[in-house]
Length: 500
Image (cartoon, one colour):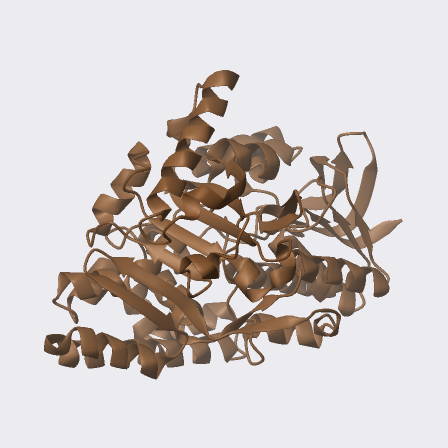
């Protein structure tokens, strides 16, 4: 048979593409090389503890959130138990320890209390980002062709144009003069992978809104429950999902996509194809046209991949709350200079690099055996720090890094290092091996000015009917970004099918 759309990869982007198309009556075939959905956002178990492989929080899952609304409209939310989250978490610096609640007014009041000399600058900053959000929402919801909206943007949406052309550091320095306050506001740069001096102000503001300004929710049983429910809904809609199936080639005829071939030689035909696999492999390895692969290889070689990460997974034999962890998430920053913090990650300074800790079992006690905790600690890291190690050296380094990071936590959660029942470490090599992320680039392409907003890799390709989804393409990294990417890719496929 010929499917309407074949989707390569059941990561976040691929799943939301498949869901969007399936509930609209299209015959979809979703192919995934792993035995479970979710990509890098999957979960796993060790000795009774359930860990999130990579996601700390997923924004926009509260009742009014965009991701929640998509799940509601597709009939998925009724299959999931959402656990409301009222706060982002605790943000720690050498001279500050603040509890950030997901509330704009609370955040403004907190910052003014801690930095009374910056009250005017704080007001200006928040007025300007409020203007940005109004314009961004109007731009997103305006039912006009994208080319027309872009043409009108300098007049109707100047805030979008402005933030797309400056770094976060350039944007915030004009409003906030206190370096420590700027550092605090920029804390979540680590969830995007670029320090403020390199990070696009445009994408930072989008992520800031979801992390610090709007409430969200967790999911009972872990985020993987969303993906399982989505697979169930896709199948209920008459479409197919096949796991343990690896796509090896994308078939074209002339300038039009025709289908895919698996590594076992199975051929599946479709009117359109969406790839949620990483863009580099998709465009330089899978396409069956040699000349086009070479063309894309030259283009993509000029683009900058994001940094990778190390994650330490801890199963504690006690509740972390009894040790003093008073909220689910903690961001630990050893310096107010984020360029310095980023450099520490690049060189593998695990004694001083930033740490982001999440105790999902505080939100859902069922993730750990009774009275215990399942904790994940992430820090950014360079692929180069793990290259060329022998198996013995690699194993030894993982153990050393895990011990260094756990020991550091004793300063903030006294006694935690003496209650470790499970300790496992995921590295950039882990991400490359299991998620097929080149050099473990967990955020796809870096969110620099040159690779953000309208400059991001297009979801359209040189092949008719062939589209991209995921963190490597528009709009960018993060679960929410990949959700939007998947939904937009589905929209491109629907438009193509309609004209075809």
